[in-house]
Each structure stands twice: as structure tokens, then as C-alpha cells.
Length: 289
Image (cartoon, rainbow, N blue to C red):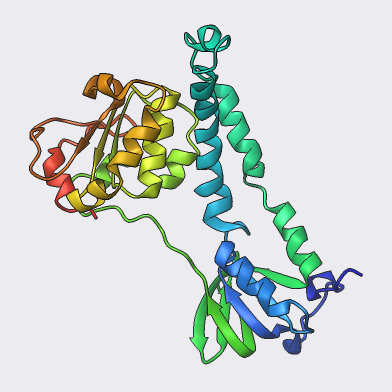
């Protein structure tokens, strides 16, 4: 039997009691969704899930799912190139970029969270749209399109903070003015740039570097601290060019990695939006984690 939530109740003046829940979860990403589901599971507890963007969060729309969707086609193509009777048929062809981008959009439901909203309703979770802030002990204020009329929610038991993170842009002079992409821009790109500088060496950076090259970026440079690069460089190289003999890898074909103390001081790089950063790679790498 479907569990009825307060969102299913008739519209009209809100009873203050309706803004009291057993648990309030701030953030509708994977962690918040799981916390909300655990809170209601096998009980009659009430839960409010507060989210100001899309239910499902970063993973569903801007990170894990679109990135994996962009990685897979080139991986399949690389595998096919090593299959007898197939490799010679596909070796001269790359991926169909518009089709790959369309596939990505399908995986993210075109950034439509109606499916996850239905999941929340069926689980007995109330989704409250807006930006939530702690206002006191077990008290949350939520502002939406009408910031002068905040809504106050109260929790009988607990408030769970699952707000996630945002991309950090280093305070390198000129970097912000160059309008750099964040990971959200990269995973939702519409056109493939010719030259890309990736600042960072974590999972997001490595995956993006991989599929950007596979989609046609001609020059790709990664800048990160030596500690980060040394921890993942083997995996990056293998994934980026797993369809080639490693003895044939070279900078022109696979992009290159910069670490502090490298020999590329003085090179000028261009952001994905076509604006020159105008700073040395080593200058940026010294300020990035």
C-alpha cells in the first residue's frame, strides 16, 4: 500500500504542526536520500528532505552518472578494436560525439528529477524545495522563491546535514576572470574544446581528462600536486590510452601531466571557454590541492 505523505494533502493554509517532523534531512543527494530512507524504513516516523536543486544531487546529474556515461562508449570502442574480425572495421573511427552526449543526457533524465520525486513520495518522504539553514536546536528555516517568507521546520529527534560540497576555484590571479569550467560544466558540455587545462588530480579530474581526450580534445594538460599525481598516475595513463601500446605513448598523443618542478614553466594555456589564463602551469599547481 502506498504511504501517504503530507505533500499528498489538499492545498490550503498550512497547519504549523505540519512543519514538525521526526527527522529533517538537509540535502537531497545520495547521502541525504539514504539518510531519509533509513529514517522512515519500517516505522511511522516522518521525514522532510530539504533540497534547493534536484533530488538525487551531484551524483545523478553532474558527477558520477554523466561522467560514467561519457566514459563507457570509448571503452567499448577500445575493446572492439582488439577483437579479431571487428578491430579492422572500427579502428579508423572514433566515437559519435553527438550520440555520446545524447546518451549522457538520457542517463541524467535531462536533469529532470521527477522520477526521484516519485520515489520519495512512495517511500513516505516529504520533499521540501528550497535552501535550508539551521536556525536553532533541531530547527531549520527554508527559503525558496519568496525569501521574505521563510518556512520553519522543526525536528522531534534530529537534523541530518548532508549538504555536499561545491567545486573550489583556487585564488590564482586571473583564474576566476578566465571563467573556468567546474566539474558541473565539464560533465554537461555541449561542444568539445580543442585545448583543456585540468586543475586537480582526483577522481573527477581523472575521469574528465579521460573522456575529454576520447571525445576529441587535442591538447590536454593536468595540473596537480605531486602527491596526488603519484597516487593515481598509473591508473590515469592506463585508462586514457588503454587501446595503445604503452611504449608508444607520448605527450602529443595523450596529453601531459604537470607537477611542481616540471620543465613546462612559461607555457600559456587556454581555458575550455577559449580564454587565455595567462599564467604559468607551475604557478597554478603550487596553489591547487
